Length: 417
Image 1 (cartoon, rainbow, N blue to C red):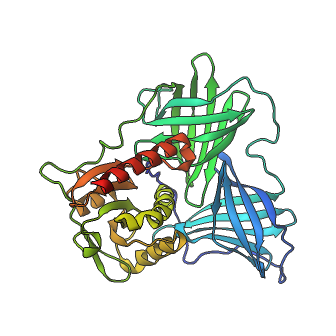
Image 2: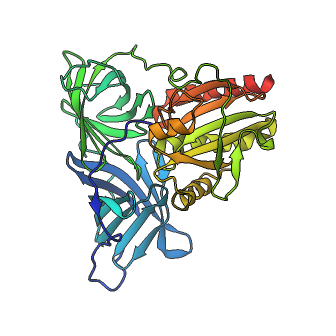
Image 3: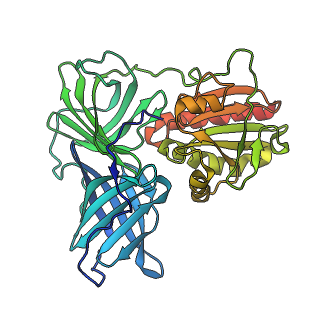
């Protein structure tokens, strides 16, 4: 996964609620809302589709809208004059007071213990635009690939550590940034004058991109606001031929190694190992992941139905979860929630913490764990045959389709042996 930005942390003893003086439920209008978080970089917009749940007047189904994605959140509840939208998998929530067509409140995300991150939140009923309601003509067309340098302080693309892939229609832009360890998922925005604006909110990711376009040099220069308060400059150069390093060469077995030795506990207390009878003589996929990692969720959303469809062919999957806490009492319920959400029929073991150095120690056969997720392919004889670092999710378009094709070709080959 992409680098994780440091975030400002506020301390609370309990989860605070939105204050209310109204004893009765306010009138809430279900439908589409244009929501935004108030960040140091300015408003970060995203969409919400909130509809009544069948048979319960105070419960709602909710989807976060980013580009082509409709990401399901947990069921929202109406409490007095406030609406609460939880995202349990990421230990976050939106809580807002109802004021006619407007919701006003906060986005909160729990960290370790009682520490909580917050940003002001607002949403307006019936609005669907992203950054600007005006469809003004623009002479800039940013469609294509952009060699990108996150962290550039020179205003030049000194290094290439990401590839921007954009599709622009009129003033609307969809796309993402691919990095060697993952992608920035579904980004949506607009070109306004000479400037590009992109955003994403999915309960975990909070991203706001801004950049100025220079048509003479075919470059973008701007900033990324991530999470609560993190900021990073970035530059990009239009380059249809730009590519990232081969994801099959970033993580590998140490010299002299050809197998992966793992033995970790599941939330049910059972220890799972690749030497268990379940995996003997089968092609096995080992998924290094974290429940806190949206890119890992994208991969899990692909792997779960694929496994259901193909497991009778002699395939097994083992998930190794590296969580913010190594304590099973803390992380076990998160793993179980993830299994329920994605209807997982394969084991997920708690392998340690999500510190990459610690994760590397937990898997000493590898040179290093450099990304979440990382996927390891093991043949019927227990030999590691391929390691793929990172994951290009559905927000990357053709790159996701390319990954799926390569995945299926590799699995067909291993299963035919």
